[in-house]
Length: 376
Image 1 (cartoon, rainbow, N blue to C red):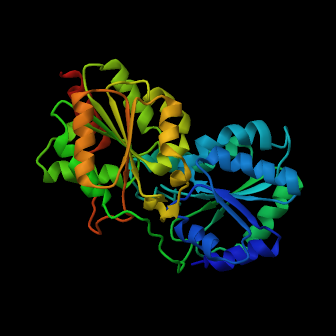
Image 2 (image 1 turned 90 degrees about the horizontal axis):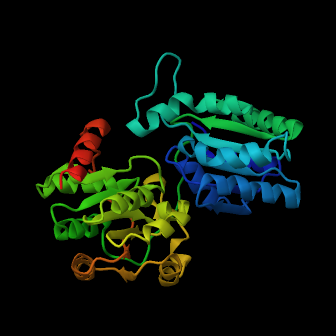
């Protein structure tokens, strides 16, 4: 395996000192090394991959130095527009190295087993890069990474264009790093359980990408509640609130709850405007100040003035709570006096070691969910 610190040393040898990206589970130790390496001058975790590309363009424009962007392959869609319409050699010609974690990767004769949301993306990852016309190199645990870095940066500079480095699972070794903690004591699972127990049987639920959806699935089973009430966004990070808001818009007589995350909200923040216009939507942000499921890297959500944000987008009610009693009061208030509500719940980082994944297929889950939505 490749030491992420040695990998960064090799990039540093080429004068690389600025990194922009969205955390990825396969690049977890790489991201941790970015925070630990003293020679990394600039490391910026961005809300989405398109912003990472655009900031990299700005960096190169100001310094004429090649930046590095990193992301999961699921984020390629967010990156396509600024790549093709700005960074491309036929437009402004901005060289950059883009490191992509390859979920659902393709092996010589088969696809590596992965979750449903990663399978199609994994199959087409290198094809998408090829269609865009950018060089694509593959990095695995046995690669001569120094040579790969040399080749990648040389091609980026020669072509005045982005070059992709696609990373297979198990490429990087672990990196010792300090584990971040926040100021909250309430577990996310306990917060979710409190909400679920307070909701009426006909309430529609939409859950964000990551561990929150997995916890909802297991809590439904533990509480002897049906799974058909929930739309679990196993992929599409940042889009849960838009899905929930549109369901609420077309089902005005039903209460809809969106379980969102701080990183997910930041990824597509503009979607809050539509969510805030739905009086029957309770928009819950489970805020642990971290991208927990992909390494625990910090988000900037707590740097925002949340109350002012809620007012700016038009939510009629706002609350920031950190204990179960306050959660119960806020859910009861919403159910008694339906009005567009942004409820932020401060949660500590962490989940159960034995937290499982949904045992029902996405197709079966969705069929049951749509039947539930139309049944009342």
